[in-house]
Image 1 (cartoon, protein in one colour):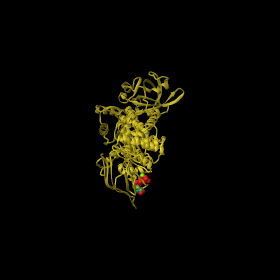
Image 2: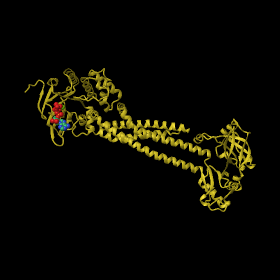
Image 3: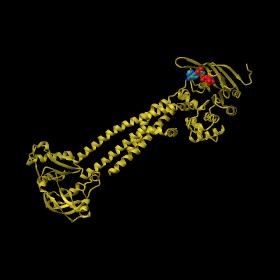
Image 4: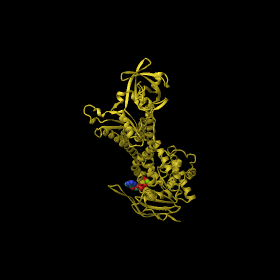
Length: 233
Length: 402
Ligand SMILES: Nc1ncnc2c1ncn2[C@@H]1O[C@H](COP(=O)(O)OP(=O)(O)OP(=O)(O)O)[C@@H](O)[C@H]1O
Ligand SMILES: [Mg+2]
């Protein structure tokens, strides 16, 4: 297996002026291409902090982050935009669809920033929405569809530029158990059939069960790194 | 990408229709006043030029410099008909026409009512330099002047009111010249060009032309000369030369005879119009500035409101330049739309105003182009700061924004 993510001594300290919060203690982490990883841990343990760094939305205070062998720590803002655009798909707990913009247009967005032609964009967006079971809702606005459907649109959007890796921060956090399972099935299918690396954060053990590897956080540290089949300790 | 930005901007404007419209108002007012003023200005200028064209561009009016006269005009200052002829001979190349500037008014019967007729007394050839549009018969000629014949050329309306027909050639009319009744024969009828001035003169006076020799008290010795210079001559220089030559010949000091020319008056009026345009242009400029600040303000509000959207876009790969262009396009489109609406309003105001005044409406297409382009520029200038603020947002902070 080829490595896709390597963190060496990555830490994050939030400086709020008065107090400094070390949300992430120096961390080494290796994730290989095609892995299916769940991150668990109590609230405030640094899961989102890590996800934002992995998703190139935020920069670590210290340490280096290699994405597919390339050090992204020293990249400029625009270079990071390009990486987020082409190499990473990010799914949020709160969906983050753009309001008053059709489902189809939302899915087209990453392709617009990739400067792809309008014709290709529309075709690809349709195809993706059909894949997540929303072929009938192309022209709906985000406020006209359910939470589960919104998250499916968000996944379709994350997949638009065929990124080799998907990050999802509590993708089922706002959904009921039925929709949660549907969403997880999409991730699982992606991982199994297309070999996409999936890293997701969840609070629910049921959801974590879908993954092959579970990282557990506490106070900014990984306290357990368990693979399926291994014995619980 | 550009097309996407335009679409985005239009949909943002559509979502906040009222707000966008109010923002545009500044531009609309600014641009419409610029357009209306320049259009009205150039229309009036057109009328003024046309007016002077009809007087004759090279018309010059000589008169005595009153500053050099004590109590009354000395008799040696009076100019005789012979001297006018000498003048014409001496300046045969430059001075194409000259008459002693004679006119009289007389009561005249129209039906049972008594009206007033104003008669401009001219020499022969007057029509070659001034645009008297003869529709029937002829203009005053050499024989009329030489023989001091009681001939009159009537204005078409006056002819119709006197004789019930415009073609009044051959008809007779009795007028009072220097307290004496004189029987005039109509030899021609001319049509007055429709201009802003003729429309405004609603008086029911009558008008006509007669030979100047009919009024010897004015014609034989005058202190005025009405003249036309050759069109290619330098009016100021030639007129000064003529005036000085005449003064010297009559043993009078230099500068005794001065002049006023149509060209100079036209220039003065045009200068004045230009000054008014500049003053109003400055006011319009200020309103554009205010409009621009309004756009900046609303764009800042819009950027704040859409912070989260900006975060989402950045998380999906939008670069600094993409966000910058998106907001810049929006402010430019708001501003340019304001410019287009303002142009339409301005053209409408000017067109209505000019049609009420009965003046040909003149607008240069360039003005419209410049107005719309300029308003887009204003939008760009005032949009830069908000757009830069949007573009520089940190993706993660923007996403956290509530
Ligand atoms: N922008 C910030 N400024 C200051 N402190 C922050 C900021 N973001 C997070 N933190 C702090 O960092 C710590 C880790 O936060 P983080 O969001 O990573 O937790 P989490 O594991 O995702 O929690 P949850 O399960 O509730 O989402 C918390 O103590 C939090 O208060
Ligand atoms: Mg979190």
